[in-house]
Each structure stands twice: as C-alpha cells, then as structure tokens.
Image 1 (cartoon, helix red, strand yellow):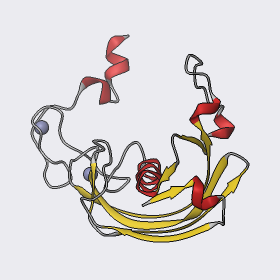
Image 2 (tube, rainbow, N blue to C red):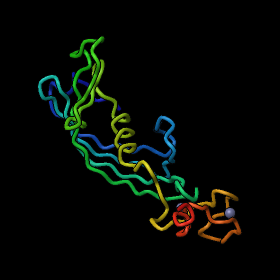
Image 3 (cartoon, protein in one colour):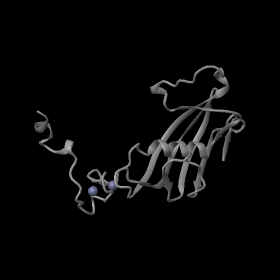
Length: 169
Ligand SMILES: [Zn+2]
Ligand SMILES: [Zn+2]
C-alpha cells in the first residue's frame, strides 16, 4: 500500500494492514517472520515532510548467536517517523543524518510505501546479537558440541584457566 502526497494534501490518512509471512522483503536479514504482521498507522503532511506514527506487531524466529538454536522474538513496537523528500538534498551531497535525527527518513517520488516502513521498523527492533537465554553456553569452539546439552572432553582453553596468568610469570 502506498501513501501518496496527493492523498495527504487533502486529508490525513489512517491505515490498517496485515502482511503474511513471506510477503515482506527483509533485505537478507537473519530472521524469519512466523506470524502475520499487523500494522496500524496514521500519516499526515507537515510542509513537505510526511509524518507517520503507529504500532506494529508480529513474531519472528532467529537463530541463537551462541548455540544456533531457534529463538522466538515477539515484536511489538510503536513508531513516530518523519520522511523528507529526497529531492531537497543535492545528489553530490553526503547524506549524514545526525544521531538525534535517527527517526528521519527520506522518500522519493509521490509518497511512501507502507511495507517499507514495516520492514524498516522490524529490522530496527531486532537486537544485533540474538541469544536464546542470557546463560546460553553456546557451542564448544573445538568440537562443536552444544554445551547446553552435553559436556565434551576438549581441554579448556588456556586463557580461561585461572592459573594461566600465574604460569606466564
Ligand atoms: Zn543459545
Ligand atoms: Zn568440545
């Protein structure tokens, strides 16, 4: 669904949309959408900027960064975003958005694509490192055994030994 300037010039727009798993392109992100994504939003025009605020919910599945086991990620987030027309920036100019303006995006053409807003918010929601639980022991770096499930017979690494620093002296 596209929210167009032409429509926003007449009145603010209220939308509710559902995206089934597989219908959104997460640009190769390492998670899978496992439930419909439900999005409700209101958009308005402020000068040349499009402001869109709302809420979205879905569920994702990713792999634990340490043990590779599946991790469920319930997603529920509110957003309040501003999109500026890209034409307002010279093409040669480096686009540097200051940290405090992280919520500012850019649009081209006649408006914004609601699906792009949804995918961007979901990608931002997912932490850089996903772990199944804080105490996950991960995989043995030597033999690959899942240390949550089993103990392997690999020698502990020297630097992990409490005596390692003593031996060096
Ligand atoms: Zn894990
Ligand atoms: Zn091992």
